[in-house]
Length: 201
Image 1 (cartoon, helix red, strand yellow):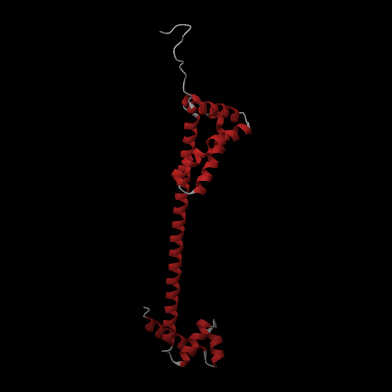
Image 2: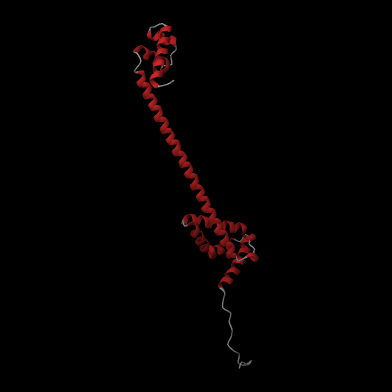
């Protein structure tokens, strides 16, 4: 029987590290909101490993995870005053920010990847179009060269001077020592033969 002189076994409350940490973080956030850099450094020391772990679970890549972690603490520094202890614990608030930042990073990386893919596809299309265009031009030049070979020597020389040399009928006539009407006739007949050879209607 317990008596005042012989009390029963003392009852001790077990320490609650989580509650102690939350209280400490709440106090630190209040100081951070007031611009206390030392409090911010301590808040970072106590929580950064968890934030980085959250980011890495979402992002996998360590470098991206570090970037996301820095963004989280920038937001903490700028928005500590918005923490409402009635809405939840400091850790819950912090991990919510970390998760959102990691998801934002995933979306940004995906958007960049999509842009690169679209740019790459567009570049390939342009390159392919250039190759086709160059091939067509080469084939046309080859066909014209072949068809020029079907003209008489006088027709071919007259057409070359007029269309490749850029000379007028009179200049071609003077160059070849022929009358202008004769040159006109040669060029007209030569062009008709070229059109027929090239299959131009």
